[in-house]
Image 1: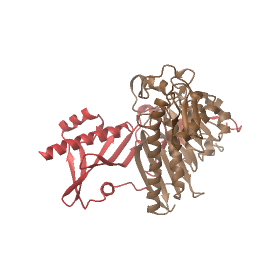
Image 2 (image 1 turned 135 degrees about the vertical axis):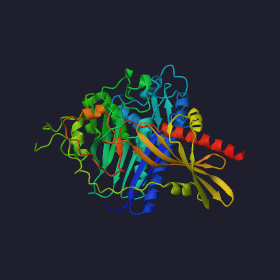
Image 3 (image 1 turned 90 degrees about the horizontal axis):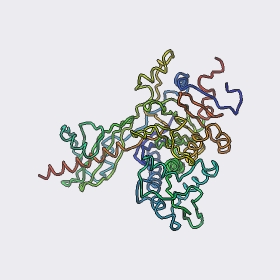
Image 4 (image 1 turned 90 degrees about the vertical axis):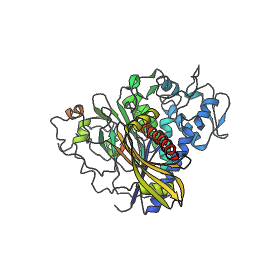
Length: 310
Length: 190
């Protein structure tokens, strides 16, 4: 196809962020990429759990004492986090950070709160743009903030009119396509069994894709097999599923839904339907379980291995 | 299989590999341009009128010293561009590689004359992917199956979803280069 392609990779959100665009000319492509990274950097700075200066860290330190004013990005992510908690009856809970800290999956920002609250203790005041915790708790918006940053980048680029664009923040990715009829971006899945291997999944011509799994690289020792999936009731545990992939209209939703599907399995179908999402679960035996519509959504109308003429 | 619209379907991962995908992906994808080292140098030091390029081979002693700063697999050779405006040294752009578990990254770090970071750009990012590296256990899954046709997508297209890769290796590489820069500055001041 015609068009000027450009791409950049930068270390942000704790991972590698790729931005790829196809635009009408080089100037437009470069501008779209810059605009995308500016948005991602803003979200990164506001919502880093690791940086003591981030807005999120300030919220974690102070919001149980008084309402803390937050910017529009943090407010937007918190609103989405509470939405996910509501639709999943608390399976998605943004206040699981203490579990992750105890399992050494996150560094401790301060001594652990003695009596930790959970998501229903988070109070957003939309008019005053503040957040208040009725109990001390720690928020970790990591995955959700990553998905939101991808959405923000895609939406900012849409204003700069690239023909096609893709943003991939460490596996949370979303596609913009202004030229219907052109093939989507090929997407691959890193396999749970062997991190070096990737499987061709299909192609994505719109929407978002996110994966959560137990292959968390760089993690060794006693936590090597732990999943970032935390059951709010029982705490962190080794995952039943090896990895969970979700297709959704927006990336924050794709990322958040991976946690819900990871805990509920195929029982999450009503929520998937309601949210216009599709999911795939890879089990320990090396099988991929796809929800109805999953393969169609990645432009593989017939599930692989299920050829109608065979 | 797949007779009801509401049923989940089960597919062995092996079938994903052996399905006729090349037809789905026409190999006509254009390679997207990445930054070259020269472009990175000009972007980091737009006011420079001259760049002195050289490469620096690190002794094993130096590499060992840098391991104490931050351990990461790093090549023993670093390219650098000194940026000058007339007789004034504006700073240095380093080109270096770090190798993680799965990823292989070439990056450009620009340090000002005072040693502060001006910019950090990734020039090349590769994830070991597809069927380039096959472990015996992976190969065993395919015994008896036709997997002799490797998938050849555009070399640049690697839109991979999976558990997040950390960029800790790159952070370690940057710390090493900053330490190296301080060492070099001391040596040249002597």
